[in-house]
Every structure is written in structure tokens, then in C-alpha cells.
Image 1 (cartoon, rainbow, N blue to C red):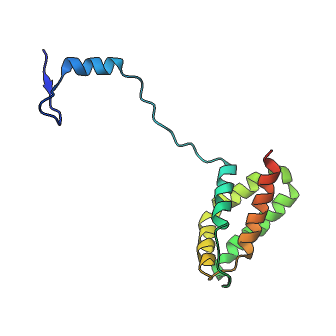
Image 2: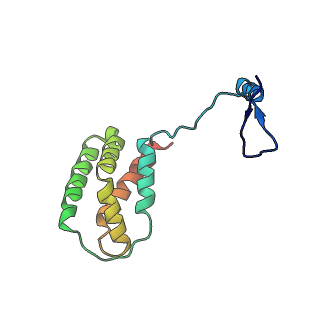
Image 3: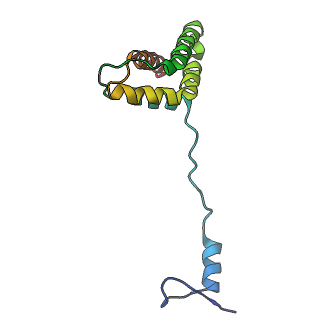
Length: 133
């Protein structure tokens, strides 16, 4: 009972016995698992994106009011509870990731002011510096 399996190389067939031997001696398959980013990783990535060069000019759109109000609330939370500042900032970044990305893109092309992004970057930088030994 030594059947031959088809391979891409017709001249070197793999027998069932060879397959069994390879399977028996093979180590366990260990897939690399991408772990979810930590809050610090997410804040560092946001800081890197904000730090890219912007062109001056532009104005906020009416739709930006939500992210501006959320940022004001987050800043108040950070000031009130500095021990949980990383959690507050991470929640803000996760919740308003699309709005921040839109602001970053518009600011890069001179279509949005950078005041909000500068405030976010300054606050994240200060908290990361406070947490990093």
C-alpha cells in the first residue's frame, strides 16, 4: 500500500510512507498572532501621524464640532484624573480615529487648522513622557 501523491515535480513522487514520516516528525505549527495594540502603542502611532508636516491655513468644518467637543471633555477628564489620563486619551483616539485622520489629511493640504491636532499631540507627548521611565 505505497501509493504515490501527485506533486509539481513529476520526477520526484512523494509516497504515502514519506508523507506519514514527514507528518510524524513535523513540529507543531505556531502561527504568529498579531496582538491588539496597547493604549500606549495606539497613542504613539497617533502621535507619529499628527507629527507629519502640515501646511498652514484652512478652517474647521461644522462636522468637526463633535471631535472638538469630545477633545474638550477629554482634556477636562485628563486634568481631573491624571492617573487615568492614558485611558482617557486612548478612549478619545479610538472613538474619534476617523475624525482625527480626516483632520490630519486636511491639515496636511492646508485645508484645516492644526490647533486641535497640536493640543492632542502635546497632551499625548506629556502623558507618554510621564509614563515612560
